[in-house]
Image (cartoon, helix red, strand yellow):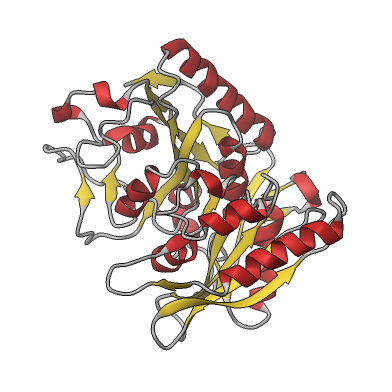
Amino acid sequence: ENDHCLIQVWFPNQQKRLQNAVVACTNSEEYAEEEVATTLTHFGERSKLYKFQVEEGLAEGLPGRVFVSGRPEMTLDVQRYGKRNYLRMDEAINCGIKAAVGIPVYTREGPGAQRETVAVVEISKVSEKLNMERLSCRLADVFESVDLHTWGRESPAIKFGNWPFNIHVQRTSAILNTLIEAVCQLPGIQYASIWGHSSMSDAAEVQKPAAARVSPLALLTCDALPCGVQNARFIEYRQSCSSKYVYEGFGFVGRAWQKNCSVWHSEIASIPAHVNPYANFSVANFKGGVVAVPITLSKGGLGGTDVTDTQQPGGSGCACGSLPNQTKYVMEIFMTDLCPDTEQQRSLIVNMLSLFLRIGGGRFEIGVLLEYW
C-alpha cells in the first residue's frame, strides 16, 4: 500500500475472547515512515492488552462486532465512536488513529457447510483513507492461499471493461465496499449500510406490512454486507438489523427495492409512529433524514457489464438463474440531524447520486429518481 497502515489479526482464545495474534505495518511514502511506524506499532502493542468477549450475546469492540456478525465494519474516524463502542479510544486518541476497518475471515468444513467466522482482520490508519477495493481483493487472495475465505468471496464476479486499477473482473464485495467508503466521505453522512436479497425463508424476525398478501416477495437482509458507521448511536441500530429481515415494498429499503427509485424522508422523528418503519428501532427519534438508494450491478442490456460463472468455496458456482437478485442491492443512508433543511438534504442526495454515477461510469444502474416518503 502507498498509505501506512497497521494490520492486526484477532482470533478467539480458549476463554472465547478475541486476542491480538499478529501485528504488522505496511510501508509508506506519504508520511515520515519512522514516526508513523512507531505510532502504529505502539497502538498495536497496546491493543495486545485487550481481550474482546464474543460469547453469551456480547460483541465487544469493533473486532468483536465483526466476529459475531460475520460482516465488515468500517469508519473513517474511530474517534467518533465513543469509548463504549471502541474500547481502545484512549489509545486511538493518543496514537492519532483515524480510519479503521474490520473484515471477517471464514473457514468451511466441507461442500455445502455453513461458513464459520474464525478470525477478524483489523486495519487501522492515521489518515481517513481506506482504499477498500484494493484491500478486500488482496486479503481474499492471501487467505485463499491457506484455504480460508474473507467476506464477499462467494459473491458473483462482475466483468467490467474498464474498472479502476485495471481489474477487469471485480467481486461484488469490492464494488460495494468502494461505494460505502465513498458515501461515508461526504459531509453529513452518519451511517450507511447495504441490503441485499436473502434466501432465508424462515427468518425469526421479519418486517412486513400487516396486509402483505402479494407473492412472491423478496426478502432483504443487511447481514454479511458492508456498512460504514460514522456516529456511535447507529452501532445499536446496526446490531439490531443483523438479525432482522424486510420484505420488498416495506419501509424505505423495501420500497426502494420494489420501485427501483430512491426513497427519502428529511426527518425520521416526524414520521407518525403507526407508519414509521423505524418505530421499533433506536433511530425512531432521530431528527436527521434517511434515503434508500437501489443499486443494480449487472442488468440485461446494461452496456459493458456481465456476470461470469465463478466457482464458489464449497459450492458448484454461481446460480445464474437468480442473477437479478444476486446483483441488486439497496444502500440505506442516514444524514446528520444538524442538517434538517429539506433543500440542503436534497442537494446532498443529488451530490451522492452523482458520485455513484461517476464511480460506476455507466457500468451499473442507480435509482436516480427521487421519491419523498
